[in-house]
Length: 282
Image 1 (cartoon, rainbow, N blue to C red):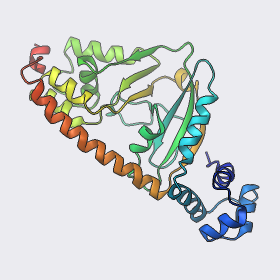
Image 2 (cartoon, rainbow, N blue to C red):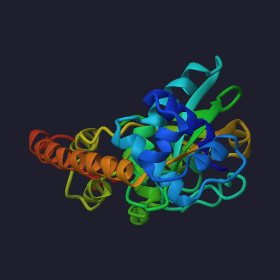
Image 3 (cartoon, helix red, strand yellow):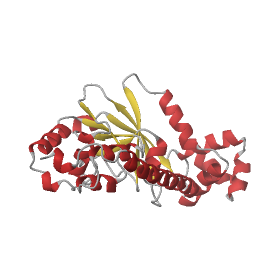
């Protein structure tokens, strides 16, 4: 999927109140380049893409966020707007078997609830982009998770840190439930070392739960079946300029630091509460 650059270019000029010549002068290209690109007579070069989107972001025009607002306004009764951050691009059809097996809930197609959430996970990759997705949830079976013991232990299993207990009946039941659905809605667990500490017996389930809740990263949607994937539609691919990428990378670092500090306090506040892994699976 290509970027919708022609429309973005016209939108950016509209917001700035610039003519084609004025914008061309600002970013150092010929007016004919802007004209032919808006008319889709020529494909934009990598240099032109970066120049336009970077200039707009420097002018505090968050074009991708603006488009998110318009896409939300256009949703149908059973539709949701979701986002997928790609390190490069989605090549061909969506394949639920293509992802890593040690993701939070194993293989599947992973999406998030907001543009900021999606870009925060791929801002460190030079050719990353964000896809907007329309999802119709009718006639699909959903498994929803909250920040609790079931969620933590299911993620621990798929991330390969629960191997010692993988044959335990309780663990087998958890995994069966996690696959008895078309898609999953669950909190994002970005701080894997906390779950590892729980599995290693260094934290109780209560401490682990509150440490992970402190990170507050939002919800993710994981598509597990072909039926579920058939009800999602890639609607747009968004270009991420270098300055926008740096902006969200810094936000992610700040939030990570805040999350680390909250975790330290949560460990102390809930010390002695809850059960350790060997007590749960005794």
